[in-house]
Amino acid sequence: MAELVVALICLLILVLGATTLAQLAHRGLRLRHDVRLEAGREALARATHGWVNPIQAPETRSDPFHQINAHTRLEAYAPALVSRLPAGNYTLAARDLPLAELGLKAAEREERVPLGNAFISLIYRKPTVLLRQEAVFPAATGLWD
Image 1 (cartoon, helix red, strand yellow):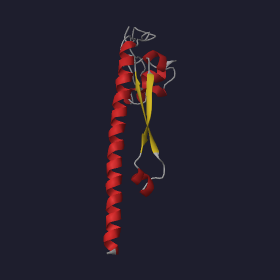
Image 2 (cartoon, rainbow, N blue to C red):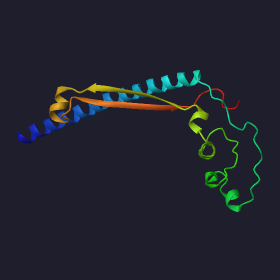
Image 3 (tube, rainbow, N blue to C red):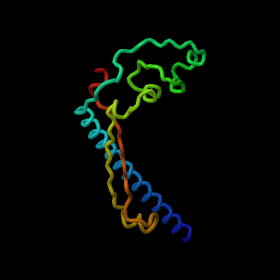
Image 4 (cartoon, rainbow, N blue to C red):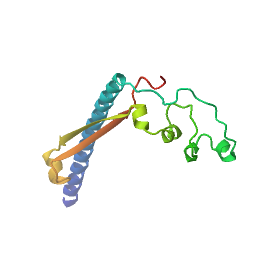
């Protein structure tokens, strides 16, 4: 009889944990969806001033290290070479203010989710859980102007 009681309590804790975790995951997904929707709408309305040097000059360095690592380690060079890519590690390293040039802006939301009484008394002693999401989108227009 004691084993049955222990098994029932363990089963109850497992079911409570699984259902609460599923509810929190669903709320987190909805919160992420809302944040991405808000950030996307704001990105469509924003524009940037475009690249500082709109005319791209050809690269002329003949260093073997540059030729081998042309796609992975370009930011290691000083002065930085001009990149033809709209965004990347090298492009952002070559710019003075990359955040301003791309028009990056973060959208944040957080939500406090109350927990059930049984979950609080058996598993987690706090009454709420804080869910937080953040999405960063670049401006959708003006990058190539």
